[in-house]
Image (cartoon, rainbow, N blue to C red; front, side, top):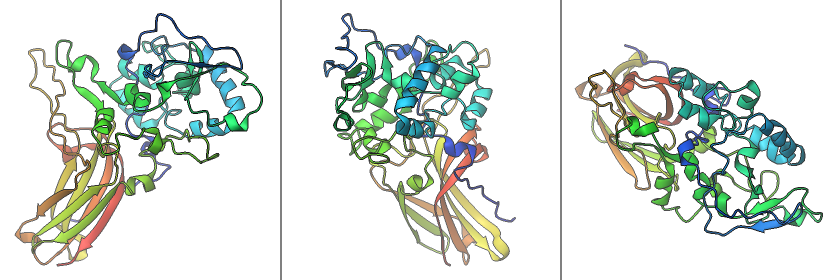
Length: 386
């Protein structure tokens, strides 16, 4: 039996455009309530300060699905903020609906829950227009609120502008800290898997961040670094798992052969702010060790999958099964040691190891190794001599 060929992907592969999770999932049931006395802007050139306690970043319009009117509004944003628009157009926010891996998954499970998140300006109960699909999650989705144009309290462009702002600007805490990402990266399965069932977390990145060593830092400090076009402004490319160099820097691996048939891999996550991998439930790390003989013949192998595992419940009388929360053995702050014993057949042969970041297109419950992959990035690989 010869060693199976492995697929590697580059930036041109469809799923390489897929982020840390799903970057733009908005559950419509989580929209914040409008305050009874909204603060209005001071005028076209003024700034309205909102109470710092208002930290919910999700625009109040999120459940309204404002439709085609947002296309012209977004074009207006791009016309003035061209450097920001260039970054956004290269981001997964912009690709939230058209991204190929998402579209393949959506074809399997075409739920309005998913549609309302990936094309937030469209009606989730009807196919979106091509134009709204192309918009994805736009500038307007995060920045255009009832009060005006939402911005952070830190005006990084103020020193560049002597003239008045051409539109009202509302500065408050909704785009700062964990709250800026909470509604997008922390949510449960629709109805908890069943209408009467408990809420089952579908993504838990914000909780992971809050218990991490980097909890005092904002998500933007890593995913929106400053300086791409201007040191005073954060990038809007939203760097994440589409960046292969960033993925490879996310872990450190030390491998050692412990006997004629066994090896250990010491794996350290270098991601300080959340588990690795984080995001949607179909991301995982494959850790593979193989004994390879002359002529590249595969002699023995052992493999582990580090992920959030979601086994299925027993079938109901109607034949329905739901995902439940199983083990979570992803990498966090503490280093992990994985031991592999390939048996007597491995003695006298080289042991090759490989650590890969994978996105699963379609899982096979109870048979992780049989899952259909949408792609992978090899993070680390090496060989231990006999």
